Length: 156
Image 1 (spheres, helix red, strand yellow):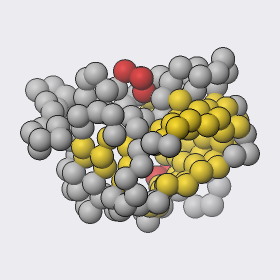
Image 2 (image 1 turned 45 degrees about the vertical axis):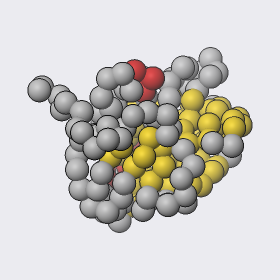
Image 3 (image 1 turned 90 degrees about the vertical axis):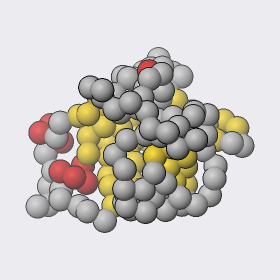
């Protein structure tokens, strides 16, 4: 498959984070373009952030590199080192294994669109959420507290 019909790719709205961590991400949407094209070694998402929305909780990955490119609008990149505004055409990278939490916040009055690219290593990657009592352990499809106890899964 070569060309992906963007209009045909369904957007996933919100997040799978347990309460209360999902609220700031409730209005975000992602089109999983890599999945739509059959990619398995790395993921490519087109993220839409309406005003006030977060891309994620601030986090870092043990084994997954990340790259973002702002396609449209503006976002604030929040890291351990502070905040900076990224505008259309700006990009940033986050190296696997470096414990610097990061996320994007739309503090502007218009939508932003960001291309996200990242390696996939779900069986070995651990995700740590810097400001939340939450981790995602390798090979698991649910979240845990930092003490290791699991959050209740949807429907439980």
